Image 1 (cartoon, rainbow, N blue to C red):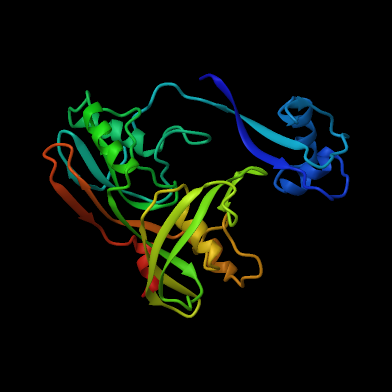
Image 2 (image 1 turned 90 degrees about the vertical axis):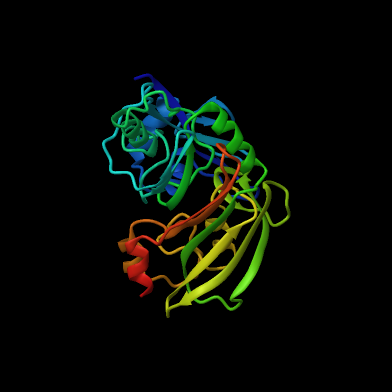
Amino acid sequence: MPTVKHLHESFIIPDGGKSTRLDHFLSLQLPNKSRNVIQKHIKDVLVLVNGKKSKSSYQLKPSDKIEWFEYFRKRVELEPYDFPLDIIYEEKDFIVVNKPAQMPMHPGLGHYDHTLQNALLHHYQISNQKDSLVKDCLVQRLDKDTSGIVVIPKTIEAREFLSEQFKSLKPYRIYQAIVWGQLKQKEGVIQEFIGRNPSNERSIEVSKDKSFGKEAITHYRVIKEHKKFSLVECRLETGRTHQIRVHMQFIGHPLVGDKRYEVPMLTYDNALQNKVGRHLLHAKTLHFTSPSNKELLKFENDLPEEMLDLIK
């Protein structure tokens, strides 16, 4: 397997900040990394400052850009994964499955074998569909921890047809999420730009002044309320990366289990936050036009047990 260098974190030093050493700054930003690991990373040129090699003792200045890289071994060949897929519908041109939580869509950093693509390859092999498209087959993506309905084309023609639908935002998509707290406004529209912050490319967030990102529109309504959390239905009018997670954080009600998009000053049930093990988001409804006969197809499935148990 070839070794690939991957940009893992990126930071820009703000104006007016106190001068500090590069290794000390990184130890604050990356608390899971020891000082020895950080210093070795810098020595091995896996940390760049303004695109150049630096030293641990370098004193950071305003506007300095720090990039932290990681190595990972990229597997070229896709390996079949014997996993019992929850197949909702299948025909010669495409397949619709209920993706479980904690399964990545495709191989990537730290996940090589137990992905949806690996499981599809195994399914196609044992069902004598060896010529079905597996690599470059994704027209729709869910986060690793998001469960729910996805459609995967089996041919290049179906991929192009479905891809155009998702690019033009024609599919009807409804998600359900369990969020912290009770929303004062039980129904509404969140219309805020979302994108990667130029000051930290790893941070996807709302751009209040619209200086970065693209417009994102989420329609939401409360389905059920509990003392500490609420079940919310979200209909996407756009399809930005982490759109529901970022939008719900923006209005002060992040997803239960989502440790990336938390809200400062919000009181969490830390035991529950740690117990659920993933952000509680489920792709419940998907409507799209069939690439086979151009008919409108409608699919819907139930919430997974861990979400149903919580809202009883």
